[in-house]
Image 1 (cartoon, rainbow, N blue to C red):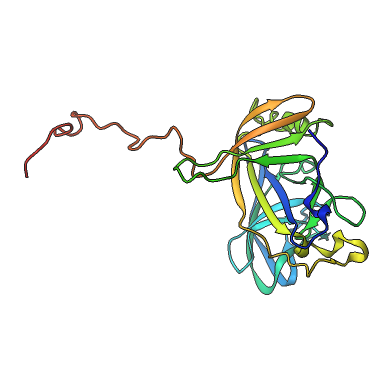
Image 2 (cartoon, rainbow, N blue to C red; image 1 turned 45 degrees about the horizontal axis):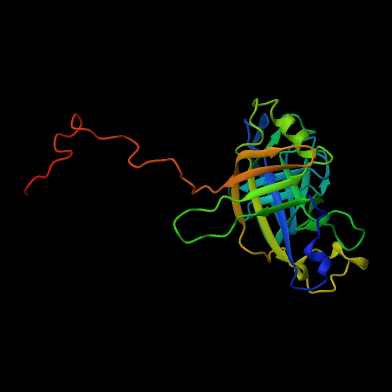
Length: 271
């Protein structure tokens, strides 16, 4: 795979920044520990979650589902920790409270969410920061998102560089929970924003020269799931993706109705 050329490197405010998240499927790719109805409060953009003796560390990525209050569901990175609380950063400023639920890996050292970007920031050529989440620099490309308008849903392909064996190692890890699954069923979210909205920490002197950072400004997210591994070798690993609405191979009705079920099947009856 060729070296990635980040669109951010074009140095224009309308550069489209493409980001990917990969969320593992609980009890298929890892053994989950469910945390349900955990109290939280938000003041400004700081969300404080109270969980006694949680054992979490800064940098752990969680997928939070806010069941009450006005918290916004999504992917969050732990910013600070105390013995019984931890904080994450919200995308909008508000005052609210309620309960939140999420899953963590029973093996705490192993993440359940991975973030990737095919490029780096302009400050120190390091990982890109978006919505206070760190997207690791990784040669990754994807195509096939175009809708044809002919009734067939797109099946994009997602290709990672495997020169360092990162993706192979991840597949080996999840295969310990479900043999030969090779990340099948993992959730892929394609996210896009513009250079002018990126977090200021990505730029020299922590100032975005292209505009005003806005963590809520992004194009509609595109959500897919890994259907199968297309290829794996020392150079790259490619996956085929499907959407939740892709029902190829599923018939309707699910049950074949015969005359044993309804005598008039296959006949015409005058009213």
